[in-house]
Length: 524
Image (cartoon, rainbow, N blue to C red; front, side):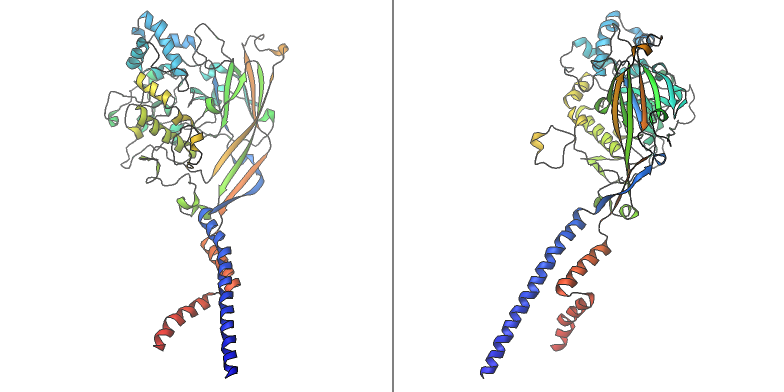
């Protein structure tokens, strides 16, 4: 009798001890499983260095955009003003009102004043001619041929006109090297095959003299008086058979003299001063060939009679096939050819203007939609979004004042984290993930004054500065973005931990199912 009680007591103790052991093992396995599941959910990809010497000849030479601080050539302006509608202006409007209006446009959108403070005649002038003012600005800028001299590509003398072309920037039209037009990246056909070339006007077609009168009646909104954009027609002359496509350049050389070098002529100030900065010189930006140039916001300042050296390095990120096969929401990056017809980059705004995705193009389209929603127009220096917006986008004086009051939509982004938002300025709320494959260019900049003994002004060329842009080394860093845990990796990790702590396996799982289903049924 006593032996039976002792046996029962020992059996109960063993059962409790075994239950505690199993419970502890389950807790420990859960402790180790939780971070793995969290990584699988929150950090599906990881990035590592794949190559520290990726050859530079496998990537495009960076784009270079240059804007002189004096934005208008007074001689060209006088020539343009001889044509309609400007030839019909009275002397007061021509000599007093127009120069003030142009200076206001040149400083958009970062003006200290606004259009509510200007004279009534300026407001009236803008309201009457706002459709033509962007064209006037474009036709009056310094041509690239007049700005550049002594151009060399890879150490070989090259015509500057073969290297530099006009492109839109955040300072209006400027000269760019190796820069794809934004309109070349536009989606040019709808689902029915209708071509949208006419929507984009000079954003796409190359004009030698940069005067729109040779091709179109108006600015990006070519026929602003037509409510139906599909009825827009091109002028019959001159005939442009097909769009011009930018061919990007690459190099297999590194060093100061084996990249791109050039001299830029600095326009001299005059009584009709259309300058946008407090120094004589220009701004230059190094950027991706596919990005919209932001020379004002991100450019480097080069003063008159300087020699500037800009060495370039880069980092490349490539995604593996495992990453590309993942769901786009899970990988948290977009492929360039991603199908985004159902993706909203902002409230009520779909990504549908550009043919291929880049984060910069996404932000550009998002900002255009948001600023148009507030002001019913967009800045004159923006690429044409007439297909996406479907309306006239030029600004009257009310729209210009609205742009100034809402410039935060153009200059800042609203973070997803609201915790510290009270410390930040308002910004555009855009859902634009990073690209899965991207190239980022970094620069090191230095400049020294020219020796007075070699002053180009004394040689009869006027004030100039020399610029050298080159790759610093033959190799750059390549990163690889890969999948952190595939489903097979997750199952293997979970199975290993469960097997270590509780001896779990597929066979034991089948056995548990058997004992709690078929076995119980048979017993009953």
